[in-house]
Image 1 (tube, rainbow over the protein chains, first blue to last red):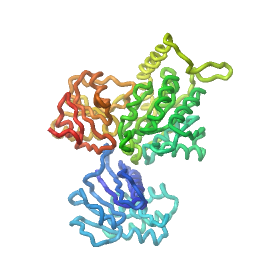
Image 2: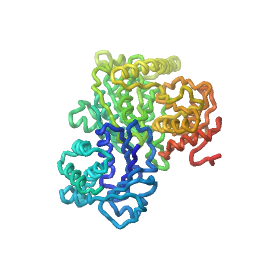
Image 3: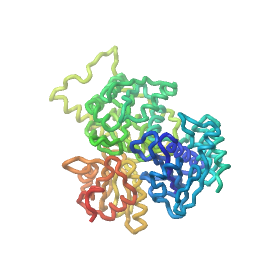
Image 4: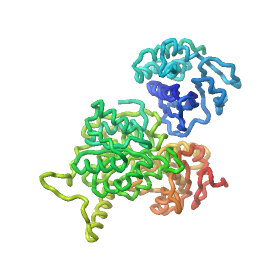
Length: 175
Length: 370
């Protein structure tokens, strides 16, 4: 089972990113679950969502304690939250743009999702949409196939720019 | 159709496919997306139902009762305090022998104000004459809701059915869901005591000491008959749609020395704990109670039992443990865990089993570990 924890701020689409990723994994004929940690969510407050992907049915409902991958949609969260908490030895991190943070030796990849969203004018209520480009980056990392990533995005969003954003992130992420 | 769905939307999909004529709901917290999604189906025309927005849960159930007695299919959904607020009408629906189907998202009761998973809300309604099923996956939320209509409306039952799903853990998680072409799986409702304007009768009138107990016994007789109807319905469902369900979901119980008994998502997590314990040489099994009313006969003779209650009856104990103790004549190790959404992992559950002390009660996070 592959376990992913996504850090974002309320309103940035972390919960939807988790759902999109689970849907893409599901279109890859795998089992997947996606769920947020429910607390007193407010717009702008740090939120966490979880994705599990497995070859067999997933029976675990508790939160992910030891993720294989951590995704950070807003790097400023790293100033207030220890995003690396519980990351498995050999685990990976995906950041939105680079920042001089100490990643404690964990393999860290980054792609500027915010720029991609702004370039395509993918902005809702003043916030760039990060949840569709990040799926392209995760496809590049091999978490899901790019075909399924695009399929999942077009199933949930009719605006084609979302697929374009995923494609841009796929191309721009350096593995 | 294969899709990804939350538990809330799975219930709404099942309601869309079961096509009730009347849906009544009160849309304020702790209400869930279930009624929101159904409202969208009704407004888009995908579901040709009358959707009645009421001013309280008490009124929601009253509206379902009023509609049901005309002989049409009815549905409502609620959660925690909403369920308690409709308590009086919950009794009326069963006493009126009306096959209302209700989804209840299990959440803790305040104060302190808490919207996370707990079963005490529904278990406080256990003596009302409603059938109660507790589900463990998003798919099961869909399947159980479909079956609830067929079971409730069967003329050997004619009692309301409550489908329970864990708050957040199931209501808000995204999992795969296969929806079905339901066809004639749920036959048209034929309520024998439906209102007939050409043959006026009184309903719920004064029933004296010489008669009242006969109606009570009739509820119990139907409750007992519902065991067969549930078996038939689950059998027919498996034949048509390929997914089979029992009164319990048993996992590696046959040769188990110790069986973990629980309800809802804890029962799925307990299966993972079972595998973990088996690797350590402890012959564990998991039995997830699906139907709490009617309460099933359990075959746990000669086994040690660890019961996990996500609920509590103050001054007595865990409500599930109480049922197991009296029905199965065993002294379980009674674990109280998961109240108000308290996080319980499969590793925690394995720990309960390793440290079991039959006959004792253990409050996870409170009782010192021995």
